Length: 172
Ligand code: FES
Ligand code: FES
Image (cartoon, rainbow, N blue to C red; front, side):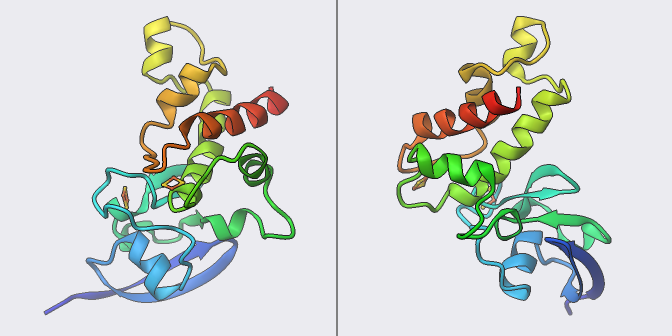
């Protein structure tokens, strides 16, 4: 017998109250209950990053977490970042640099990329930073390391790093 629970999520600024089977992942809550299909399901077990969203500004794989664990949290998906008429700067950079081919990984890449720049700004170390034993800097190696959780089966990696570098440069 499935157990159901109420959970309130603020998704892209809009409060929602859902009554969910407690086993529902945050990804399925977004896609199947809120019909926000911009967030993609690649592997459904934490290996591809296609499902990356921001929860209270921090990136997570939404397939790996239960929706009911996010009572009251603020979730941002690709739909909340920009629209075709008014792209988020990171979306515009992906377009300028051809940072995608099929586009399946792109919403996750963009959510991840936005969080990566915040992590670097906040001085949160990565493996590269730890090896260098210093503050994070905006090198291509640093960006590649931090983006390893986002797999692109089309191999658009170098263009993705170019897009993020451009935005990183304009923030620095
Ligand atoms: Fe979540 Fe692949 S769908 S990591
Ligand atoms: Fe096709 Fe990345 S653009 S998987």
